Amino acid sequence: MCMAHEIACSCGKKHASFHMKDSVLPYEVISNLYCPECSPTLAHDAETMVRDNGWVIEYDMDVARLLSSQMKRTSEDVTPAFLFDEGWCTWNGFEPQDIFNSVKERQALMEKAKTDPKGYIDAVRTWSIDREERLRREGWRKAALAAEPAGN
Ligand SMILES: [Zn+2]
Image (cartoon, rainbow, N blue to C red):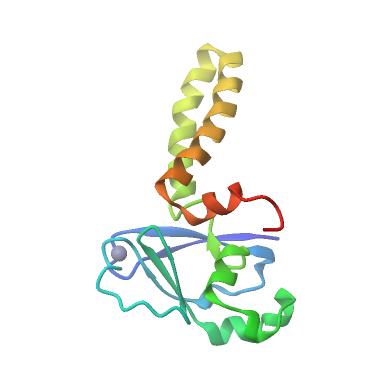
């Protein structure tokens, strides 16, 4: 089972929705979250933080390492990039506000469904492909990872 959870950033202006693969990690593994407005003054610590397009997630690595065996890794293998890129504690979607944004975009498409059901199906298909491409161009880490060949 996977669970989603919403967390406020340190300045409180923004929220991000998180996804924890298989619910292995508790939400307490996120010790801090910084949006593009509250991250610039932050001293980056690669031992505990991962960056994505101006956002920074700071992890409680002690909590994460305690659960390393459940992620089928040794505690030395558990890094912030591993937690994020392998989905153990990452955005719910391609970017922090993906679920809120995609719901809005889908609602706009739903208007089309009322008048043109067939056009709607094509529009949804094009939308999801175009959207991933756009997020990749914007520089989101997960959209870039999704574009890489498997096993890379
Ligand atoms: Zn903030």
